[in-house]
Image (cartoon, rainbow, N blue to C red; front, side, top):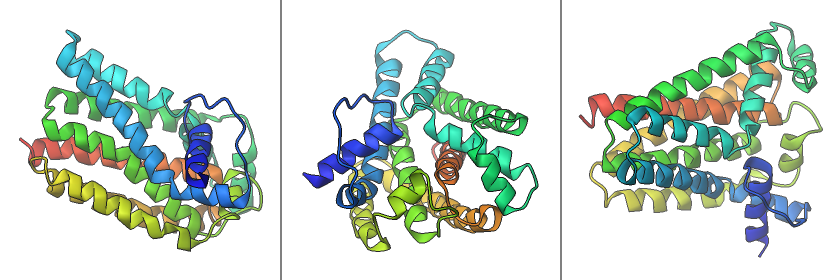
Length: 262
């Protein structure tokens, strides 16, 4: 029951899916929420892949329209919470201030020019990748789209519990105070199950393995940069890591359609 409530907490925090009842915010439930991060990502990915499949197979919409609807869903389903982190972290980084100054900028509710520019670049790149994937879609494409948020949320969970917090307040500190690295024991089981399922899809295991490698590389980069740029993780830094990881995964899937799936 705690795990289910932790999963629902994640839906409240990280998606726009309406959860209308109050959920406990004590440490056991927050710990379960951290364990459920990848499953929330998998739900998101399943919604993306299902929408993509229905639009591709059962509607007369053009490739451009299908790509737009999938791109729009990737924004609306999360309520923009991770994009907000991306913009705040971009504003802070491009201030070229020291770490305390960057943390102060991330607390400012106003969005600066660098945040706006960075999110335009991010979303433009994502749309390009989605559009060209739509033009060259294969059965395995749906599976890979489904695992992109799964991998990014896994990166978020590992970052949360392996990098020190830059401050003692905020969403990141709240989750970090409730769990230790030991709760991540369940993540390898998720990965094993996903890898096992993809063996039934042509090239699925190979392609997913590449995406996992890219996600691990993104994790290493994010860990290093979170400490050197911001002094540790915050909720905004975690959101930026999710968006950055997903961008690299979309780009990888786009490239795979040209060089490994053609």
